[in-house]
Length: 163
Image (cartoon, rainbow, N blue to C red; front, side, top):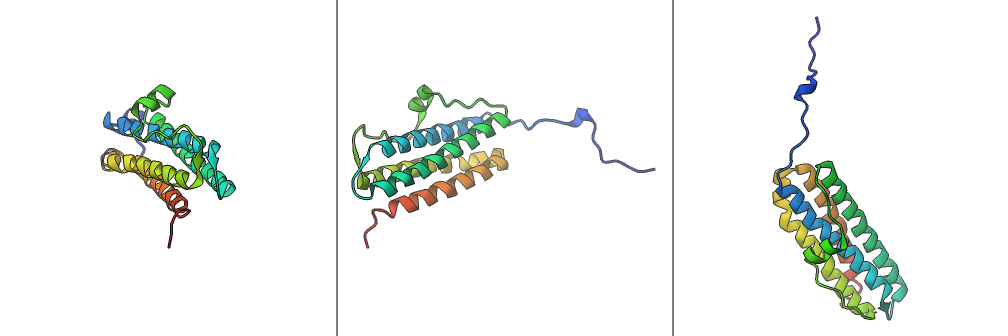
């Protein structure tokens, strides 16, 4: 006779996240959506020296933020939470400073977008430990997003660095 390690269906349970987990992921989501939108706004209104290279670099940052927001929203759905990326919600709850509604010099744009990337990273870092305690799988996603955003910030801010 062989023994089986199979469990009956009655023992199968979905992961039950504490309410703080989707709330923390929502904070990250709105900042990533806002970063995506501000990056595109800067992309459209950029003027000055090194325009073309920065214009293209901003698209890369926008793609990074958009992909990260999708990752977070899909993780929320996997946890049976409802991501809220509506414009009213993003505007009401983002922690990123507003971007000026004007032509943006390449030099100013580098500084403005870099600070917004770091603001989004700060939000992720501020909730990381609580997310990790509730769900290490979600925290793993945050690690990857922080790595990508900090690399983008380093590459962007290097445009204005003087030696």
